[in-house]
Image 1 (cartoon, rainbow, N blue to C red):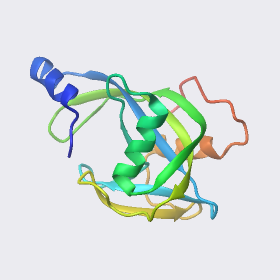
Image 2: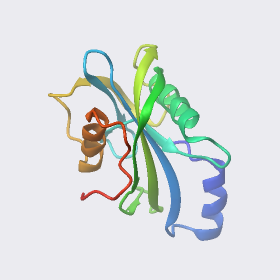
Image 3: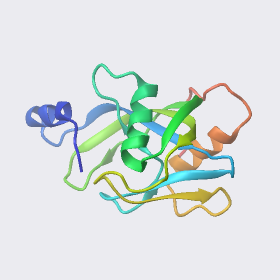
Length: 159
């Protein structure tokens, strides 16, 4: 699992204490109404392609980079779906985190979906009516990406 250098540097100072980070998440939907999912190596769970915004990065290009790095799929941004403060969480090594998550709806442009890094065990397209077990947070992200309203959700949602 690749951890950005700026986080490793911070962890040297704060140990496993809670870090406030900016996350970026993509709901990549194709023309067949399938969503692109990754099965994470750290938890074994299916999720949306996502990453951590690094210092100086812009959210949309960073997300497109993450999607390509994780899945080999090149995508384009359709719109901002939501801005959410996610619940605090922890990684298997004990690192505590909480994310301000910027979620974008995206569409694939080119590339065949496959595992393209060491962060994921599997990559696959799933029909919206046959999704694997996903967290409530990620199911809500997909639901918001499917809404016709093009205004992003700015307020918290129940989890």
